[in-house]
Length: 163
Image (cartoon, rainbow, N blue to C red):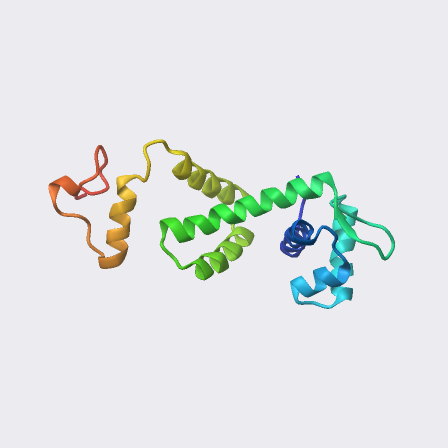
């Protein structure tokens, strides 16, 4: 596992996305995508090169190594799962979900993020479909009330029963 800073993670993901869009990536392309000047990019790239994640011939194109591609894919999948949670489970608009996903993934501990991602994967993979308690959460988030009708209560859980 690589000890990547938040900035290096963002640059690695940006290089990966640019490679997929336009096949070749130049420093100026990356600078434009990141909203910075070329010297800033060069500084970050040096660290990514030292970690073996990016290669570049002198003044040439940037290319992710096999490890760089794998790490970028892992980071992007994690970001997508966190964004999906905010959008699909909490019901946030896409742009707000994206903004919060980026913030959360960088600032919670790796162990917490791993558990969070595992939880989202579980919700997506569960063969029982959308759990009933999520429907109850949606209702609760709108009006602050738990379902009161007996047929609306969750099966086999105490979430809807009084303490």
